[in-house]
Length: 333
Image (cartoon, rainbow, N blue to C red; front, top):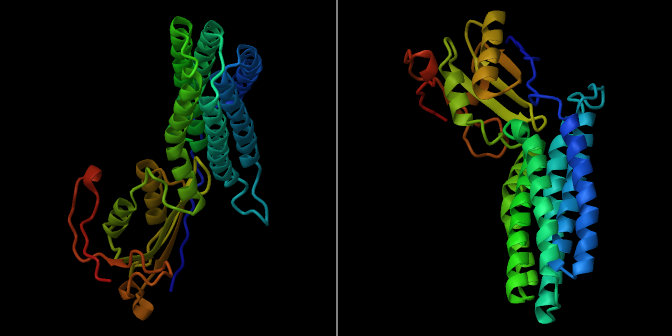
């Protein structure tokens, strides 16, 4: 039995160095948190204080995400053979949980204000929140380029974009309070802000938990990857296919391919290149086996051991154009 391994080391990272974006975003938002919290206490506005608390959580998120990206660049060691890239996933999960903790505090305080409304300074709320719209929008734009390629950068973008929308809502609230004197609108808006954050952060929490559990990255279709591998020339069966994220920017794949020919270096490198360019998989390890010893490709599925997904044999061949090279195979397991 031959064992061949191929590793594609042309890893894909975020498009640019975001150190400058993190620096500008953190400084701007930290200054604004101080201003917003101070005027929130002066104007006796829970909405402003709640938004300041939310902005402070975003500052913490930016700081931790920046630190995680720096740690992820450290070289691999004998104890951490993948390096420290996994920390970026843990940080994205921590950011989501931190955000949800802030939501609970905001709602608790808001219900207290609903029971006992207090007068607030509407125009102060409006001016301060308007400044927040500008700062949050500028910060969000700093991370727009990397939001589709890195979960941490996506988190930063979503946090700041959400803040811009929330601040815009606070502006409207301030104008309405100034015109009508409806002070109860302040705690009501605080609850709306909390619910908005709840919805905006759900995708981040779900994706972070999924990657933490070694799930297949959401943008990779495992069935299509399986179809490609079973459609390769001379591949008779694919088993032990695993796809997971090593960080918020890099993905890995391992699979066993049964090929009577034993494969070749050219086959391994071409397959890894295809997986990198078409499926965003950066680290590929393929084990070639000459025969199906023990009938592993026919082992009953669903036994929870992992080695029976997919257990798929290539039962027919169809020569398709390159862009449609997703082999139609039947699963005999």
